[in-house]
Image 1: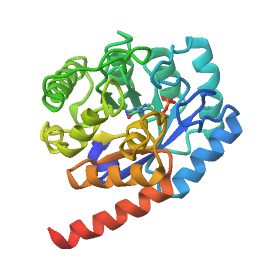
Image 2: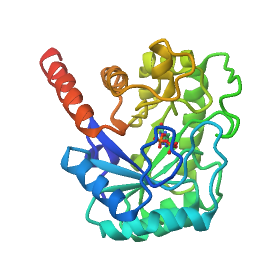
Image 3: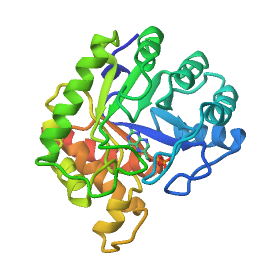
Length: 273
Ligand code: HH2
């Protein structure tokens, strides 16, 4: 199996397919045929991967039971029949195991292998790619006054430790990417600092995935202190900023806009380097 960078070269766009009734951006689709159609459209628009999730992790959310999460995502994976490159957005080993059996190639775990003790083994045995994300606290309470002394060095230290853990558990290092977890236990300033100093995470030596798309900090930057989402345009800007600082993967709701913007940014980089 190729390394993550060979399979998903910089920049690669990851399209978000939320099979949920309660995702923060209101984009959730609950019928399997609709979700599968959305995934196909995203790949046709240039996504290198689609990230399918059956549990919202928006601030304040409670999580869903295993049976319900399986009931949401398995029919979508079955409808796709292994024909698209799929990542499964889950912290549960049983959901990951079923998804890998049904053709998924990556596990995107927002708990960075701190939740389900069997998940690392499922990823290692399945030879899957893995995304390790930073989160302070848990979704229910993570936005209650998050504090860091230096957010970037603390996130970097966390990701370095989780990377070592995953490798120790048998996951091949060249299949792992790292994610600062924008919006997961972070103030607006923390998110901006992570984006602005992203090189410090890229320096850890693994591809970095960034998920700024539609997140509330973008709406708040634009002057609405109560915003629960941000506009597509600000998300595209955040992705381009992250690309310029070395990010490889971009987890987004609006694939076409990101593919176009990143192509332009790539063209600039190609002549300027
Ligand atoms: N963000 C969300 C969910 N999963 N995974 C990674 N690796 N990085 C992220 O930034 C990330 C993620 C939240 O966005 P979304 O899936 O659109 O919303 P919800 O969790 O409410 O379904």
